[in-house]
Length: 243
Image 1 (spheres, rainbow, N blue to C red):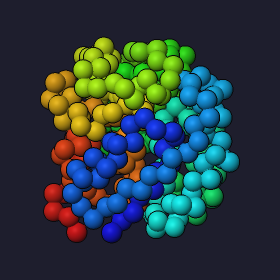
Image 2: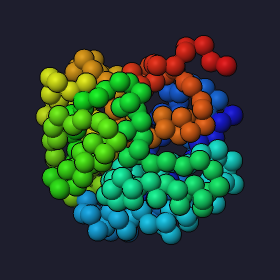
Image 3: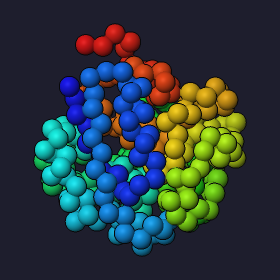
Image 4: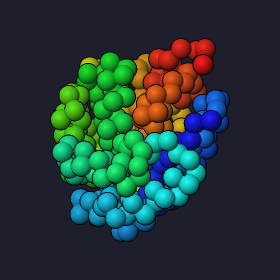
């Protein structure tokens, strides 16, 4: 059994994780600890406060006791608002506090885009324009070219958590561009785990979503390779026969 740990801010789309665990169909357990969200606002100062070392460190002891082998800060905006260097420092502090390999959803998007060979991506962000632009800048710092960004302008994660399939497809449709090798939907408050294969069928290209890449990143940290077509093309690049 491989136990993967996640620090998830507040309560929005955390039910994606048991769904993903089921779709993995392997001896993998996803352990989720909810961190204090503070003020629920897609605003830079609130997002920076959400991901402070003190807030994240409070959740790691529970993950250690659960036997987690790696931990991922499951919040995209709470990582990239610190910039590339700041997000790296955030992850280093988390790894030290947890005593295990650590990463964040922001880095998961960069690593996943590299994995599928998507050098150019389109971004469909729930965030306001300024926050979405920071995500695009983070991707560029990681060597991923951004063809364009569509911002939905939503201020709170609570509102994002109410979105369903129709809204997710509309967001991806508004973001897509012919020259983009993949579509990125960067908000862990957005329910997407049930829609990834249908999204990829609709747009004819990989679709990377926040909770999907977060789990993939945790698997990467533990050197686990899982073939799970129900989670999209990102999860079909590994051998079908598992060891």
